[in-house]
Each structure stands twice: as C-alpha cells, then as structure tokens.
Image (cartoon, rainbow, N blue to C red; front, side, top):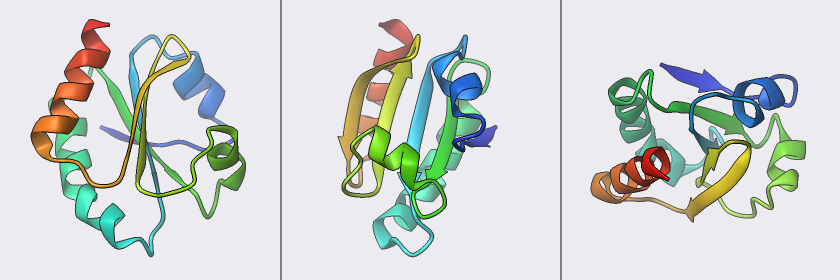
Amino acid sequence: MEYQFTTNNFENEVTNSDLPVMVDFYADWCGPCKMMMPLVEALAKKYDGKVKIGKVNVDKEPELAKQFGVMSIPSFLFIKNGRVINSAVGGMSPDDMTARIDNLIES
C-alpha cells in the first residue's frame, strides 16, 4: 500500500510510525519522478506490512520539502524511529532502491 504524506499526517504516519518509512518527494510535472513511480508502487506492494512507502507532493507540501532540505526531486528519505537513516536524490535502479529498503529494515 502506498501512502500520501502531508503536513497534517506526517508526524503520525512517518515520525511516530512503528514501521520503517520510505518517503518519495515528487511533483506531478517531474519527468524523473514519473519514471520512478512504477518502481515505488511495486516496492510499496512488495514491502507492505514491513515498510511504509509513501509520497510527498512538494508543490502541495513545500513546508515538508523545506524541513528536510529537499532541493531536487525525486528525493527519497529512509526513516526509522523518526530519524533519517539514508537518503537519495534522482532516479535509482530497482536493485539500489531495494538494497536501501532492505538496509532500512535491518538497521
């Protein structure tokens, strides 16, 4: 299952989540973001119940983008126990993203 994170639900859904979380900062107009979308959706299904995977639309939630220093999109944050453990900017291969998620689970 893929989540939509907003300023209103971020603390509850991400910061206080019992599961590790991967956050995809994106925009509807962003070509590389659109390229990553099928992979993010597939991984959300694959890791359902193990990792919460969701998105933040930077055009609708500029405060969250600013809070996490997101300057380029797509940007991915890997968060566990409310702390950013890893991050990546730009397109990633399926193997790289899977490795980062597996590392998030194991950390």
